Length: 178
Image (cartoon, rainbow, N blue to C red):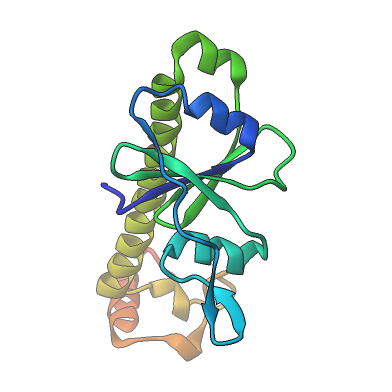
């Protein structure tokens, strides 16, 4: 799954470590506000900074980018060693590991974080597919236990024709006693 954009938000100290990446380019981004008549309003040109400001009610400052898809921002209110990676606006928070970053390099470290995110998203997708397939199988085959009093799934108000067919078939096979 290829994301549209990846945004990283962290404190200034960790960003100094990112700047050691050979493909890091400094780009301070857009101004956080624009003039609208006599008032200043949030700048909507940087969609992620606008989203972050609305979500957390704080301003982040663009620091640069790594490659073409990864933008880096600093939030001066992040005091700990946390790093937030937004994978298409979905947030993943990690504790920054200085020793691993220094030992293996920033490229390897960021790659491992992105790989963890992709694996987690793939697991969530797989669970969603399984959940949908179970619902489809249940709809197609019917649930005979909706008609069996005393069973945890007993619910005569939600019985479908497929459930009745499954109930009759289970009776015929001797799985349900009348």
